[in-house]
Length: 152
Image (cartoon, rainbow, N blue to C red; front, side, top):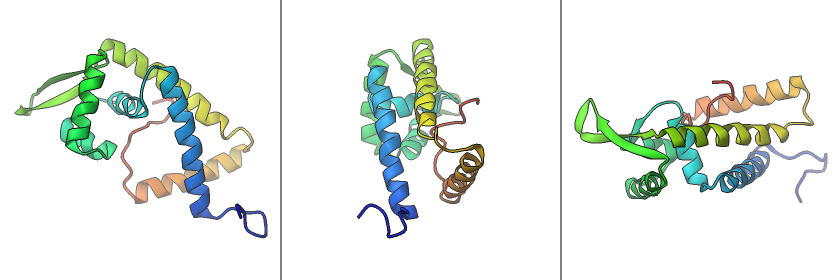
């Protein structure tokens, strides 16, 4: 049964099912921009600033070897570059190239628009309540800042 006897979905199934919805939108948008989902995540993270490999590994939840492969593939596509870390000469930071920055902004804008459409049937009060509650879940669980507010 998808809903309880009152026609309501519990918090856990609703979160899981909403994750599927958002992931589907994110994946479709990534494919249309010639990206994998993970490349889209990487580009969105790097929109704010360059990061070191260790920071990216933690933020994206990837093993260092997986992250290295992701960065290698994205670098070969001309979307990111490795640069020396000014604080640690043994380390590198990953930054967007000019082309990667343009693609990241386009991907980000389109993905935000599509995710926003998932909320079309909610009024302003419901949207505010959803944002407040999900924001609390995110903050309470130290979720990484892999996607910013659309206007940031």
